[in-house]
Length: 171
Image (tube, rainbow, N blue to C red):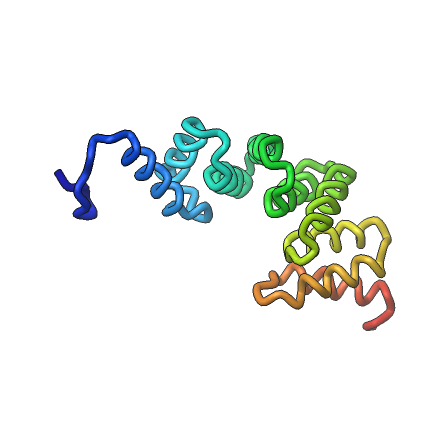
């Protein structure tokens, strides 16, 4: 027998596992269509410790506005791997932007940055949170570092401009 890709199929459980992992890798969390959601939910049910499936499902849930569910997935993942800066940055962002938990967001963002000072997500988020706390010099340094990254988002540049203005660098 062959599957739809023309690859010979096998009844061994290892092939089923491999096929499931490939399905997760092929999902696009930006397109939260029902098939993507179902694939990711099934993968997390089968292996709640799979960091890729958990991360992608958390992104889908966050985009869908299911912030409590997304934060629970991130927290679950961090219990298994507490030193995962991208997951920490995602959770800190959810805390800051959606769940209105600024102290938890700041601590999580700071911890993510401490683990990986070059992580642009952690730099941008910690910079934004420092700005909100009035730590303008720290915010400027972190936001500039994030803005220097190749794929910096428009939000980073907006946050940097606000911090520059607050520091009197632009008028």
